[in-house]
Image 1 (cartoon, rainbow, N blue to C red):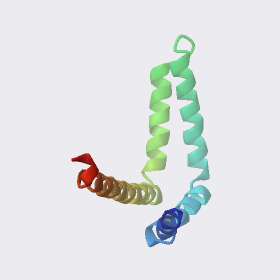
Image 2: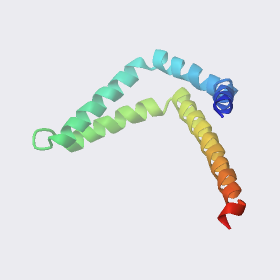
Image 3: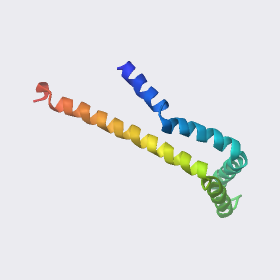
Length: 114
């Protein structure tokens, strides 16, 4: 069983989609570092404002965080990254559902459960 898991993981890692995902991650970190830093800072400020609304202007922090997120997430490489990530996750979830169904059906057909 362990060999099958390793084989499955290797199949994912060696897929064109996963290789592209890694390449995009590298590109994003290099090309959009200032946007990432801004996004993370605005996110931290927003979280702090949520925790202490009596001190900070929550609406202003939320707007700034939303703008920083929009600036980063509107970039083509970032859009492609999240699209590929979703595609890979969907394929893995489909495979897991298929495996669950195969296991479930095997138990339903077992003479011991009748």
